[in-house]
Length: 389
Image (tube, rainbow, N blue to C red; front, side, top):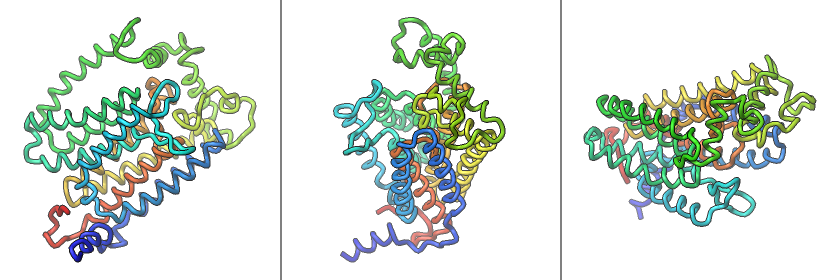
């Protein structure tokens, strides 16, 4: 019993220094979320209540995880990995279907999207896997094992279908592997294969009758390549998004405005509170608001990376680098879609887009990062070495 209490104390009640708590990161996350709440309320008032609930639940998860030993959490990486596989299989068999995609689990009046949680769990799993195999990370068998295990949840997400989330997680896993110390010869070899394969893939998927991707995914790519041709079909929403951002000019038209020329008020963007939330930011908050959102995201990513450079072990470092790359990639892709730089992918804007599961998962990730920061100067009885429970 005494040993059990001791373990619980070491997991949840370590003697952290309040000075090590990264308050600026928490403030930036809350400010960005509040901007998101304001814009969501303007885009779709009915979605704001659920987003507020997501912020409350997310804050609770953040505070709990910020004082929970992240090393103990990483020790559960196989349990988390197995649980993720189970949930994704459950979605495949019993999930809720919306717009032709089966990605949700219904819990009363709420829906839970496991693929959003997968983003955080896969970062935890990858960071611990690479730390465990740090000395043998450049063995081909270890790399093969890494990608083989990662492929299972990625395939389950892809067949929902959810190509954008699959690509997002895959890119983050590659970043974590690279930061984990993989040899440059593997990186060069990967580029030598990936670049031509990507070119061939893009050439194939734009051909009539192709079977590699779904027809709606092909339409999105074609609409991006030829926006004028598809301006009244699949490219309609993206062109309206660009128009909305441009119409905001310097300071925007204001939140909850009733301007007749508003793209939002004219319902020219479907579900503006999610994938195209940046269009509402641009239209209603203008260039200043858009730059503010981008700046906040950039500072959040910078602080997370900085915490990672000061982490006490490789697992903490890679965890921070993984979350930073996830937020950076999602932010870039969402804004790129809204501004026509990339084809429509359906990736939410971190902390801003409506989505309860996405917001809670991101807050949970921030909580774990805060704990990494709290332990940067923590000296355990083992001399600061990794302690497993």
